[in-house]
Length: 189
Picture (cartoon, rainbow, N blue to C red):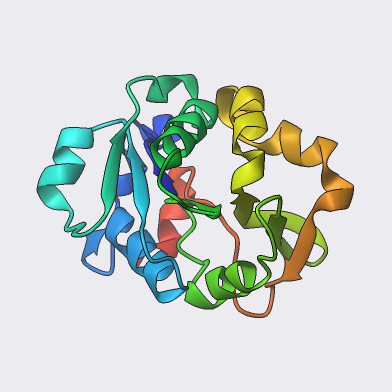
Protein backbone atom coordinates (compact mmCIF):
# COMPACT_ATOMS: atom_id res chain seq x y z
CA UNK A 1 0.00 0.00 0.00
CA UNK A 2 1.36 3.37 -0.99
CA UNK A 3 0.26 6.42 0.97
CA UNK A 4 0.29 9.23 -1.61
CA UNK A 5 -2.49 11.57 -0.50
CA UNK A 6 -0.52 14.40 1.10
CA UNK A 7 -0.98 17.96 -0.03
CA UNK A 8 2.61 19.04 0.65
CA UNK A 9 1.66 21.97 2.85
CA UNK A 10 5.32 22.48 3.84
CA UNK A 11 6.12 22.48 0.13
CA UNK A 12 3.77 25.36 -0.59
CA UNK A 13 0.83 23.10 -1.38
CA UNK A 14 2.60 20.96 -4.00
CA UNK A 15 1.14 17.43 -3.74
CA UNK A 16 4.01 15.01 -3.12
CA UNK A 17 2.67 12.36 -5.51
CA UNK A 18 3.17 14.78 -8.40
CA UNK A 19 6.69 15.95 -7.56
CA UNK A 20 8.97 15.13 -10.46
CA UNK A 21 11.58 12.43 -9.94
CA UNK A 22 13.66 11.14 -12.84
CA UNK A 23 11.31 12.88 -15.26
CA UNK A 24 8.08 11.33 -13.98
CA UNK A 25 5.72 11.84 -11.03
CA UNK A 26 7.13 10.56 -7.73
CA UNK A 27 4.12 8.25 -7.29
CA UNK A 28 5.23 6.23 -10.35
CA UNK A 29 8.69 5.73 -8.87
CA UNK A 30 7.19 4.55 -5.56
CA UNK A 31 4.84 2.08 -7.28
CA UNK A 32 7.73 0.65 -9.33
CA UNK A 33 9.80 0.19 -6.15
CA UNK A 34 6.97 -1.70 -4.47
CA UNK A 35 6.46 -3.97 -7.47
CA UNK A 36 10.17 -4.65 -7.88
CA UNK A 37 10.34 -5.38 -4.14
CA UNK A 38 7.75 -8.15 -4.41
CA UNK A 39 4.35 -6.48 -3.94
CA UNK A 40 2.03 -8.08 -6.48
CA UNK A 41 -0.89 -5.67 -6.08
CA UNK A 42 -0.35 -2.05 -5.12
CA UNK A 43 -3.13 -0.01 -3.53
CA UNK A 44 -2.37 3.71 -3.95
CA UNK A 45 -4.16 6.04 -1.56
CA UNK A 46 -4.80 9.39 -3.23
CA UNK A 47 -6.11 12.62 -1.77
CA UNK A 48 -4.70 16.04 -2.69
CA UNK A 49 -4.92 16.56 -6.45
CA UNK A 50 -6.23 13.01 -6.95
CA UNK A 51 -7.64 13.87 -10.38
CA UNK A 52 -4.31 15.36 -11.50
CA UNK A 53 -2.46 12.27 -10.27
CA UNK A 54 -4.82 10.04 -12.26
CA UNK A 55 -4.29 12.24 -15.32
CA UNK A 56 -0.49 12.62 -15.16
CA UNK A 57 0.76 9.40 -13.59
CA UNK A 58 0.84 6.02 -15.27
CA UNK A 59 -0.38 3.55 -12.64
CA UNK A 60 -1.63 0.51 -14.57
CA UNK A 61 -2.77 -2.41 -12.48
CA UNK A 62 -2.89 -0.36 -9.28
CA UNK A 63 -5.95 -0.13 -7.09
CA UNK A 64 -6.54 3.60 -6.72
CA UNK A 65 -8.17 4.50 -3.41
CA UNK A 66 -9.64 7.95 -2.82
CA UNK A 67 -9.27 9.41 0.65
CA UNK A 68 -11.68 12.34 0.89
CA UNK A 69 -10.36 13.01 4.41
CA UNK A 70 -6.72 13.31 3.31
CA UNK A 71 -6.32 16.74 4.95
CA UNK A 72 -6.81 15.07 8.37
CA UNK A 73 -3.38 13.47 7.97
CA UNK A 74 -1.70 10.15 7.32
CA UNK A 75 -3.99 8.31 9.75
CA UNK A 76 -7.01 8.80 7.48
CA UNK A 77 -5.02 7.56 4.48
CA UNK A 78 -3.88 4.47 6.37
CA UNK A 79 -7.49 3.74 7.34
CA UNK A 80 -8.66 4.21 3.73
CA UNK A 81 -5.93 1.92 2.43
CA UNK A 82 -6.61 -0.81 4.96
CA UNK A 83 -10.35 -0.59 4.22
CA UNK A 84 -9.58 -1.08 0.51
CA UNK A 85 -7.69 -4.27 1.38
CA UNK A 86 -10.51 -5.74 3.47
CA UNK A 87 -11.93 -8.78 1.73
CA UNK A 88 -9.05 -8.87 -0.78
CA UNK A 89 -7.62 -12.10 0.58
CA UNK A 90 -4.30 -10.42 1.35
CA UNK A 91 -2.44 -11.80 4.36
CA UNK A 92 -0.44 -8.62 4.95
CA UNK A 93 0.02 -5.06 3.77
CA UNK A 94 3.36 -3.42 3.24
CA UNK A 95 2.93 0.30 3.90
CA UNK A 96 5.22 2.75 2.10
CA UNK A 97 5.22 6.54 1.83
CA UNK A 98 5.36 8.34 -1.51
CA UNK A 99 7.83 10.93 -0.21
CA UNK A 100 10.70 8.53 0.53
CA UNK A 101 12.44 7.98 -2.83
CA UNK A 102 15.64 6.85 -1.11
CA UNK A 103 13.97 3.61 -0.09
CA UNK A 104 14.29 1.16 -2.95
CA UNK A 105 13.17 -2.29 -3.96
CA UNK A 106 15.83 -4.10 -1.93
CA UNK A 107 14.56 -2.65 1.35
CA UNK A 108 10.99 -3.53 0.36
CA UNK A 109 12.07 -7.10 -0.49
CA UNK A 110 13.83 -7.49 2.86
CA UNK A 111 10.74 -6.42 4.80
CA UNK A 112 8.44 -8.59 2.67
CA UNK A 113 10.85 -11.51 3.14
CA UNK A 114 10.51 -11.28 6.93
CA UNK A 115 6.75 -11.97 6.79
CA UNK A 116 5.84 -15.11 8.72
CA UNK A 117 2.15 -14.94 9.72
CA UNK A 118 -1.07 -12.93 9.54
CA UNK A 119 -0.26 -11.29 12.88
CA UNK A 120 3.16 -10.12 11.68
CA UNK A 121 4.61 -6.71 12.44
CA UNK A 122 7.78 -6.05 10.45
CA UNK A 123 9.61 -2.77 9.89
CA UNK A 124 12.72 -1.59 8.13
CA UNK A 125 15.34 -0.38 10.58
CA UNK A 126 18.00 2.22 10.07
CA UNK A 127 20.84 1.97 12.61
CA UNK A 128 18.43 0.29 15.03
CA UNK A 129 15.62 2.84 14.62
CA UNK A 130 12.27 1.71 13.20
CA UNK A 131 11.34 3.28 9.86
CA UNK A 132 9.53 2.52 6.60
CA UNK A 133 8.38 0.43 4.96
CA UNK A 134 6.27 -1.33 7.56
CA UNK A 135 4.49 -4.64 7.05
CA UNK A 136 1.20 -5.21 8.89
CA UNK A 137 -0.27 -8.70 9.05
CA UNK A 138 -3.98 -8.81 8.20
CA UNK A 139 -4.93 -9.85 11.74
CA UNK A 140 -3.64 -6.45 12.91
CA UNK A 141 -5.46 -4.23 10.41
CA UNK A 142 -8.58 -3.49 12.46
CA UNK A 143 -6.59 -2.45 15.54
CA UNK A 144 -4.14 -0.40 13.47
CA UNK A 145 -7.01 1.39 11.72
CA UNK A 146 -8.73 2.09 15.04
CA UNK A 147 -5.59 3.75 16.40
CA UNK A 148 -4.60 5.69 13.24
CA UNK A 149 -5.09 9.41 13.81
CA UNK A 150 -3.72 12.66 12.46
CA UNK A 151 -0.27 12.66 10.90
CA UNK A 152 0.93 9.81 13.08
CA UNK A 153 -0.52 6.93 11.06
CA UNK A 154 0.31 3.64 12.82
CA UNK A 155 2.94 5.19 15.11
CA UNK A 156 0.94 4.81 18.35
CA UNK A 157 0.01 1.22 17.56
CA UNK A 158 3.59 0.31 16.66
CA UNK A 159 4.94 1.98 19.80
CA UNK A 160 2.46 0.02 21.94
CA UNK A 161 3.52 -3.23 20.23
CA UNK A 162 7.26 -2.52 19.94
CA UNK A 163 8.38 -5.88 21.42
CA UNK A 164 6.38 -7.73 18.75
CA UNK A 165 7.99 -5.94 15.78
CA UNK A 166 10.60 -7.74 13.72
CA UNK A 167 13.16 -5.13 12.69
CA UNK A 168 14.99 -5.69 9.40
CA UNK A 169 18.24 -3.78 8.93
CA UNK A 170 18.08 -1.70 5.74
CA UNK A 171 20.61 1.08 6.30
CA UNK A 172 23.00 -0.54 3.83
CA UNK A 173 20.48 -0.45 0.97
CA UNK A 174 18.24 2.57 1.62
CA UNK A 175 18.24 6.19 2.71
CA UNK A 176 15.09 6.94 4.73
CA UNK A 177 14.81 10.70 4.18
CA UNK A 178 11.44 12.38 3.54
CA UNK A 179 10.63 15.06 0.98
CA UNK A 180 8.94 17.53 3.34
CA UNK A 181 10.44 20.95 2.66
CA UNK A 182 11.78 22.95 -0.26
CA UNK A 183 15.34 22.06 0.84
CA UNK A 184 14.45 18.35 0.60
CA UNK A 185 13.67 18.74 -3.11
CA UNK A 186 17.42 18.49 -3.70
CA UNK A 187 17.03 14.71 -3.19
CA UNK A 188 14.88 14.44 -6.32
CA UNK A 189 16.56 13.91 -9.67
